[in-house]
Image (cartoon, rainbow, N blue to C red; front, side, top):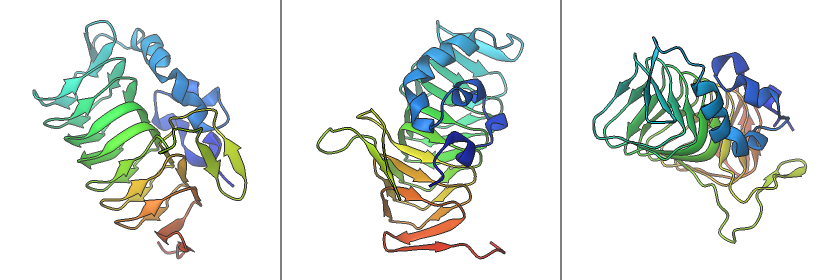
Length: 222
């Protein structure tokens, strides 16, 4: 069951490299995102980043619409686009060349470089690897209905020690429109989620999730 940081991410594609290198499983980094942003934000070059208030840093090459709501701690990387009506609630490290779309909400997240959450997405307590893409209306569910601890469920079960864990998406993951990623979902590198899916547990790398009973390995040509 490949759910470790080293299984999912190219750490050279994120400013969060140091934080993620300090843990074994990605969800273990969730508690430290805000503090880490405040630490590295102060080291970002003033020629490249503008600082808003005490703990928001925005790359001067990023495009941020005037109608967005930004709460720190927050870093927005180079050449990233934050579109009209986006709501970033804090503890968000957004990489380079990302798209945060209209009415998209982020909270306690790491978005690696080249991530796209472009249309009506909610991403909370989650980590999205490089080039991951969430289709329109797809969301991460980060709290169980009974408010108990989230457990990662695959061939084995791994307690997270947290009541709030969204999704851990590996590099190059594609999530189809209007899908729901239930608390503690882990999707391996280069895997695809069909539209309108309800996903729970671990999806292996290089697979296609069609339903909970049909998760198929990709053709080598794909």
